Image 1 (tube, rainbow, N blue to C red):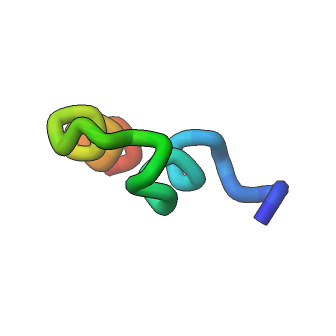
Image 2 (image 1 turned 60 degrees about the vertical axis):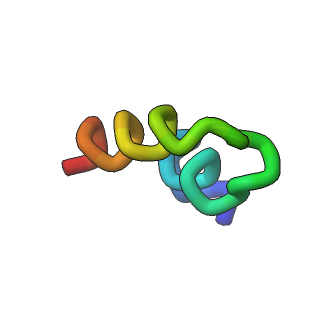
Length: 31
């Protein structure tokens, strides 16, 4: 899991990111 990028980790835990917009942005950046 540590190998995974911080973006993916942030997307995984919705508790840390209560904002749905942030999640969408992260997915776009990953894509």
